[in-house]
Image (cartoon, rainbow, N blue to C red):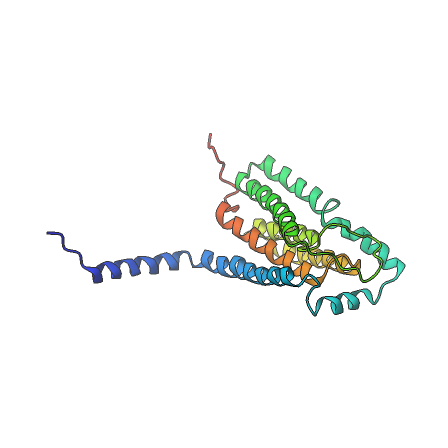
Length: 234
């Protein structure tokens, strides 16, 4: 006769779960802090944008404070630097990194780079089309934009790429340099978007959050650190 001990079964399962959580605590912590938390905050921002297209109470004061030091010299600098956020900076550098990974045959890292950057573009365009948030019009911008503003494409592009580089170099001596220089680059691009008046601060924040969540989430699936393991050994 079949004898099923519920208590023993539950104890065995709880013991297995305990060992599983202990073995995967790093990945779980990254999942909670790096993916779930940013997604929750992004969701709150997106919900408020959906209900209130005019922005948040802190959006306009921050924009005006950033723009209060405007002058023709800064206009020219911001107009030039902001182009580095996508086509003049992120795109060519990412292409160079991709070629390097291709020649080194680090297939997992290359797949991670392509998947993350491509997905970031798709997420940005989809969110903009769904939420239809108009850009601020507080002054005449020297580099106007005419599509929707939430989340910021420049903020997403720069943050996604920097997060990818940090993850790819995390187990190397270069990680702190990438973290420092990448962080400065992300802040610089964000400043240009605010100074030029083409984004609300909440557009920037939302772009950062969804980029971090996406880049970390994809890394948990692809594991780009397996760069030295070819997909097909010869």
